[in-house]
Image (cartoon, rainbow, N blue to C red; front, side, top):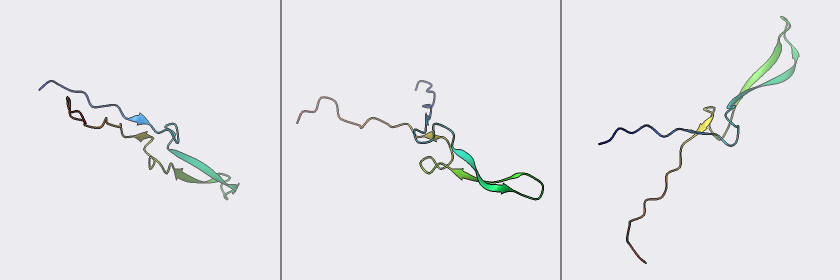
Length: 64
């Protein structure tokens, strides 16, 4: 069996690889820092990548 390298993961088309963002809530806390929350991409669930699609397995030489 030949050595195979794993297929590279594709960048998520919905977030372009920027899977988690910080959203400001407006205003500042008592220390003067912006109040923020983190939000993950819904499509890739915060990973920034999507699985590689495989071609459908079709038998060779079979005619309909």
